[in-house]
Length: 631
Image 1 (cartoon, rainbow, N blue to C red):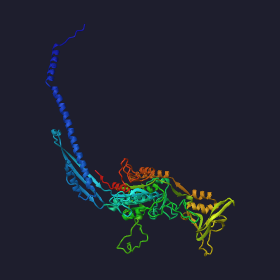
Image 2 (spheres, helix red, strand yellow; image 1 turned 90 degrees about the horizontal axis):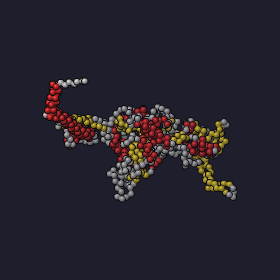
Image 3 (spheres, rainbow, N blue to C red; image 1 turned 60 degrees about the vertical axis):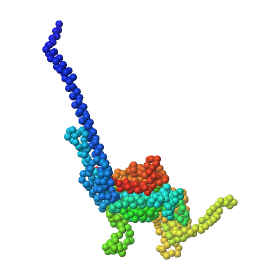
Image 4 (cartoon, rainbow, N blue to C red; image 1 turned 30 degrees about the horizontal axis):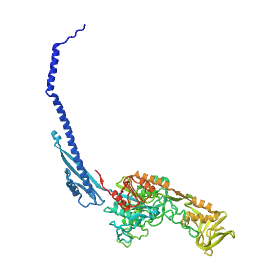
């Protein structure tokens, strides 16, 4: 049997301890513990409130100071920048004050201004003062700068045939009143005058130029104008300084790009580029006496050539006023040239143009000044201050491309290599006139044959000789319609050597006749219309489709975006296909403007912003010149 023993003394001691603890608990020792914990929680919460008040006042002061220095840094406002900051803070009723005077770095020579200001606010604490912190000091700094350094702009403008159509833009005076063509205000309820798309563009582009140079140092802003239709006319001055361009002719000044060229954001002026053939692939109005090419594949009309980097407002305005419409649409080629005039690889060309006289016939004295002037230097193609442009992408420069269209990419054409250069088999003698009888015919059922009527004699100048065979030599005389001749045509009765025919190169031939006429008259009369049309027309040129051009546009725009170039896109009353291409080309939200019929801006809302084309250009100008908050 197990016996359990208990020490009565130890049991009594334990019971006594328990009784004392019970007495102490009833006396409030646990309550004190809870109260202390609550005080700590309350203190922590109070510190949080103090910190929240501190951050509230600091953020309010920071925001107010930011707005103050931004207003002061605007170079167009005429008040002293320091006073603008001081007044802004005083009238804002914000808690806090400026620390010292604002620092202003004003450089009117380059049109820049930098404003730096410091401020502080003492925030009273409600709980932290129990710990020895009666106030918290919040110090803020703001720096605003309006300074771009340099700006390079490429204006890529659509001058295709659709620009001749009427737009939804009405003719108004500077005050916004409707006026007629004589400048008279149209009374309320009268019929407004609607501008053509080209006239609306000319008005908008002219105002853009004025806005860009207003109160700016012109030496920091260069603008290039790149008009485009189915091709881009680079101009004789520019293309002659691109050493890689082929020289088979100088009738016009366009180039043909390869597919891969649109994956590159630049044009290497030393790399081989085919000069576009000067030809018309299909003149529907040609006849026996009318073989001329019109229009040519490469533009030559007034206002169609590129104006490279300049800041001469008068020159820019004259070019804009000289723009004319005509031809298909090649957005891809326009953007390609616009990109090239922003890329540093084109600097050697611009440097040469800055040394080249705008007037090649200007007379200079022995000191290099224009004769008859008071030491006036000759005007250069590109102003000398831009000889180091386009600048490197990483330098202090803002590069902008603005592309505008009223349509969409359409077809363009290139001559095939076999017909590009070298001698043709056609000779020409201008010293000739030949009269040919042309008649209409009807089928006579009685005579069972075609009978002539309404016959007329047509006289054509110049005779073409086409070599049919080299051995033995045989030539076909086009105007006379005869073959079997052993030599090219020579005018009878002319002194020896003066009436000879001249063998034409392909560029010379296409400058005189279009492809269709050549196939029909030079070859079709003896070779057969079907065969000559295939060999000398269909197989002589290639067509670049609109689908291919859309891809090319997308590729060149994507390449340009990798260089942080700002691309603004304007679809001016354009079809959806064209608007989509322009939108995809742009730098994204805020860079694409869709001006619809009615002159309103499609911003994704039902109301729209009701901006005209001119207002869109003004918006872009303001965006380019906007302030930059640097700190």
